[in-house]
Amino acid sequence: MTILTCVYCGKEYPEGTPSWGDKVLTDHIKFCEAHPLRAAELKIEKLRKALFDMIGVSSEKELKEMEAVLRSIPGIETDKVAAINAIHALLETSSEK
Image (cartoon, rainbow, N blue to C red; front, side, top):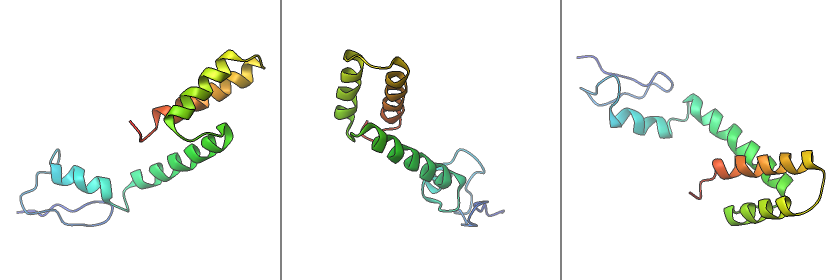
């Protein structure tokens, strides 16, 4: 019988593991340090930090409050839209859900 291995780190899966759709495979992907998703996760976190620094608040509640304030005050519309889009991106990628 063929033993499956992770193509990124070489970890061997238990004998008899199917080549797709098995929980062992998907569980390993979440923690495999060599998997390309780790690089994507680091980039997302870097972008989130930059947006949080730009917006000036960090919790989901504060983000929603900031959006309400931006919508209610006068200002340069393009700047307000950019800030609201940043808030939406942060809310969409929030781990507080």
